[in-house]
Image (cartoon, rainbow, N blue to C red):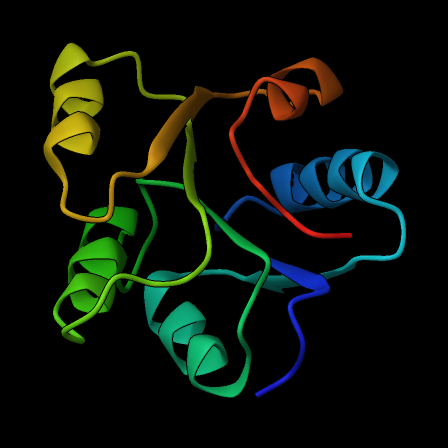
Length: 126
């Protein structure tokens, strides 16, 4: 597995991936941004890497964000990286589901900004 100087950003929207990786790169210089377009691809990438953090959208084709988080949780142990849901959903049930999820993901509404990133509890050693 590679070192934790990378983030995995999972979203099917190319514009969001571009802006999110830009904002994250500014907030965490020296970190590599790896992207996936759906949860299935992200699972494969997680087999090859140990990210510093996982940023995931909820609504995606093939495997959505909830399915990805559930599959990560089914691996029998909590990941040793922070998980952040970044979504355009304003549905209170999504926030409640995140609060009750075993992985305890943080919840951020799009768009992702440097201010929102600073307010996250990422605990990342640089």
